[in-house]
Length: 352
Image (cartoon, rainbow, N blue to C red; front, side, top):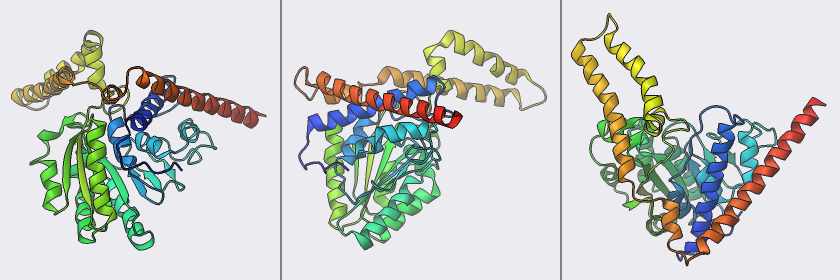
């Protein structure tokens, strides 16, 4: 396990972690597009600053509970890249012996676990924190989840329990303002940060594309938990560039409006005309809601203000970011090559 980071903000180290995360996620996307990884693939591209800025404060003995976008925090935590790749390639020698996939990764060595159940990161983090409180005084845990999970009952129960028991845990909400293809504000009343503060825990709101801001806020809240003062909550705004999953239909329409739009328009218009069914006004409103989702996604793309990795790179001297990123890319390519070779040898052995 990697040595814990210094309390000082280290732009080079954090940019390096963010670059490793970005290139690892891109490697997963390539494997998925080649058909080597099956099922949905949920990437964390756009969340690099949040993962790196928070995990940098974790020490040996701290727990880490992650959602279905598990790989960014696990990469930052130092989990072996080749083992994760082999897991997602379905190899018996993978991190979880090919039983977890990308949504259910677990590393006992790192006290890290992920779950595909929406909102599960919060109660899992409470479990890690309770164990820390009883067995490892001074240790903490961190739980990651998205803004869509803030309406899950078990997550709100976890916030309440953590405060009632003064658990040493930091809850991290990655807010991209979307719950899959639903705008979060259309199904969520009030402010997310207000909900957390209602439990009496210190809560911070940061720009999740700014690794310095994330690092500073997370450090303050984690130190609060380490001293036995109870839980904290971090709300970090981010932009998820690949949508909810690779091949997200909303993004496909935006990227290729003529081809994808034509494929979508036919079934939608047929649904409007089909009989029997709802009244015309009701169908028109439903069609307008679909159009509204596409419009909102398009507008958000236009308003995006840079990229987390690019912003972190601008904190470094000219040329330094490029050198660090080349090193990170080389490390990921090496892990990928070893994983693919390992898989081929395993298949040959099984065939023999």
